[in-house]
Image 1 (spheres, helix red, strand yellow):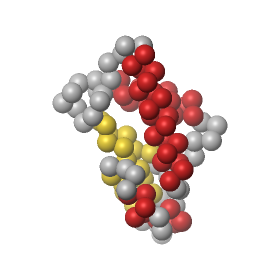
Image 2 (cartoon, helix red, strand yellow):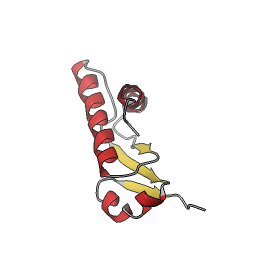
Image 3 (tube, one colour):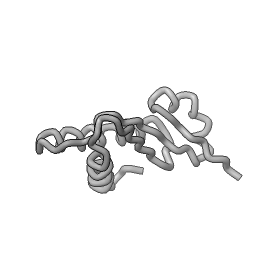
Length: 96
């Protein structure tokens, strides 16, 4: 999912983090098409990089973040119990 698109995710995370820089706003970031723990880890790493860069530039950004995933792939559904421990919320999309 992230392979070769880290900069795209980084810019999107930058924008999302700056969209609600007020303490009483609960920001939810959902990453779709997650297929495993490695992708969750990679996305969280890019999110942390975005936070570090914003902090270095002394920009205000949302501190209250819920990290969520959407599981749409059948093999990822089999890992849902493991993936759930790594995120604040997950949604399992029915596969027909």
